[in-house]
Length: 443
Image 1 (cartoon, rainbow, N blue to C red):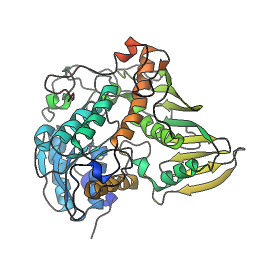
Image 2 (tube, rainbow, N blue to C red; image 1 turned 90 degrees about the vertical axis):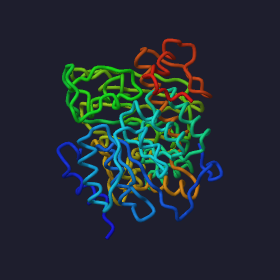
Image 3 (cartoon, helix red, strand yellow; image 1 turned 180 degrees about the vertical axis):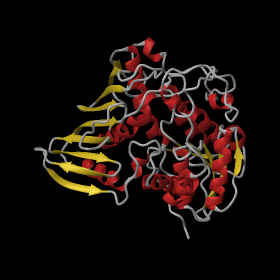
């Protein structure tokens, strides 16, 4: 009997403490599998989000989807999860610590990447160079330059590349956005995105011996080498500028993407961001409180309010997006939407049949299956990706621009053709980064 996603995740949860926790046409791709061909998958990054993706693939399952290989730099995770996945699915997977070795396997057709942000673009580009299709978790890049490199690589190598902003595949979100485009709230002109949570502090880390289960060199990958500290791995890297991209890329990206999609806008003309690390005094280098605003041609705008450490909700939701128009508004989240008239009266409410996670660390739910299924369908037969990498890169760039504005403390004027920052050399200095020798994604 075919197992459910939740059964799969429950089966592998016992592996150990902490482990639970631009192109749309087939003619664009130089290699598209036949409709009956098996897709062999390689997964890199096996904690939290990575486990949710393996569970979604296992749920879609059947003989046409095979979890072929697993990769992680944490030997404990690789061993324990590898064993439990094999027991749950019913066959053994290859295991590998070094992503570069895994992706060279000619049997693998597609790579699913759920690793720390600083590795996303280099891993995806290397996979494309090796002929693999790529499902790439958000954010698709660590910096703005990598957004450009990903789009260039996809065009050069002709691979199918989908970013993992899974709400793009939510049936209710698709309907809500379609209705907005059809004029259900008149002319839509503003999007408000928000996120709230109750994260704790991360303390002050100290330089320590690398745990014997962790390959610290491989974990750092493309990032210039730093000493190991005891408060970075596994999750807190999100808040360090050397490896992470902050809450705006960790969570705002989802709702900013929905706002951009609903308003039908591409690159902003002006960006500004304010905020700081207000709640705790610790090693967290990004912002626990941030308000970013984006202006677009045609009198449209988008804003994001993020509160990482204060969980007062908006419309009883920890995250979501509201689109405002001349004849009403639509509130959209992962689990449905609400439509209001101009006086704020609720006139329509539509829910997803099954809820997906919102502010937890995993994001489990049926939307992951819908998004992966879309990816698999396009790999086999061509068609329309819900979030092709050019769309994913545009939304990711929004977040990078918000962080850059925050860093320099001023409004940024943006070239709406390239996304580059105009007349501000200091801001443009954050467009890219230095890479560890041998790891640069430049092609």
